[in-house]
Length: 469
Image (cartoon, rainbow, N blue to C red; front, side, top):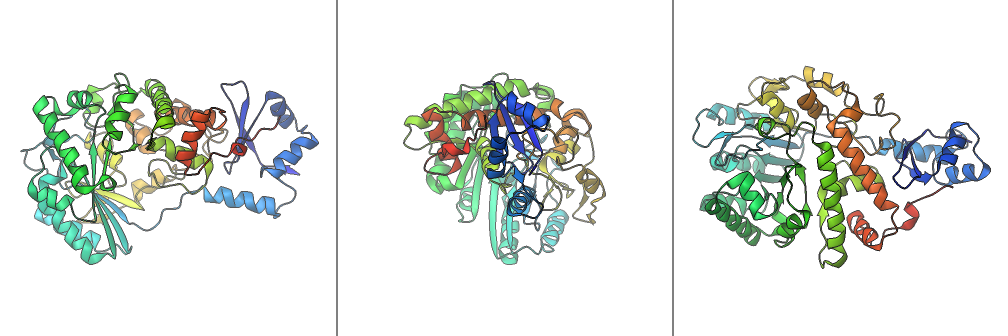
């Protein structure tokens, strides 16, 4: 019998978590670790490992083939380009201190698409062969250029079999014409609600009349469009966060039960105004407290709530192929399945890449809509876009569930060869996966209820928490 390589990580309860390259996991103790390291596994160990998919008897047998299939299923392969982020303007009618895109004031000229840029964008969209298309309008505040949004919408409807449009708007000033656009059946709204109203005012609106106006527009959007078409997320200062319960109540009271917590990003204006470059320890403590509060909330709530990213990571552990979130894939190939077109027509592989370029740190553009795309820089970056052979990742028990974010490393450290365990990305995800496995192996009925809800099953199967002692 041959055992597939096992990685291990000590856990807070004094045991050891083991995982293989395909994401199979179990817990044991240091005695098992010693037996494994010294090739002195017992007959009981062999039976357990073979039964649970961590070993095989000969190459090509069913156990071997099953492992290879599970391993391959965890790798992300980019599909056709069917998702485009468009930035028709950098102008904005708010001045949020944590702005990550370095927006400009509402009346500043020179930061909108010209007629030539709009024509070139439409020509670019016309070359895409995918039958379905998702367009996300960002800014600035994209509704300041409703004319461009309308033109793009009309073209895409005529070009693609199925379209979806997402407008990332602050919902601060909404004209009747904007309401009409947002009310269309294929248009969705993404906005920001930074927890309770007091926190939102401190970070975004700065005065009560503007805050009241936003709250009225947000509630109107939910009433007019329905919860299924309106999503919101809070941006959190990890060093001065709002109480978790206040965020949960602010969202669930409006019928929004999926909350995507985001720490202040180390991009744009936030670089100067927030200590966001090395804030993972503060964020990890707050995020774990938020998850605990969600567990308590869900125990008695008629309609449960989730933290979107935590649930995404949970599902990556429980099953392969859960690659919907673009920031956590392996390999994290950029510049192929989707791109970003900025206010000046330049094309970027990700939204974060345009932010890095915006502050003058690196030029991560890959051409423009006038002359076409050049992939030389991006393809060089993509050569390092996998954690499978990275020397800092190959021994990590969480490697199969994790990804890699080279653009974030470039933004924070100016390089991509910083030891992974020292990066904000790694430290945050180690904490998330530690928390998930703590919950998977918990006997607390409150924890198991939330795990079942988040995993999408009636009851969380205790047999998933496998042991070999």
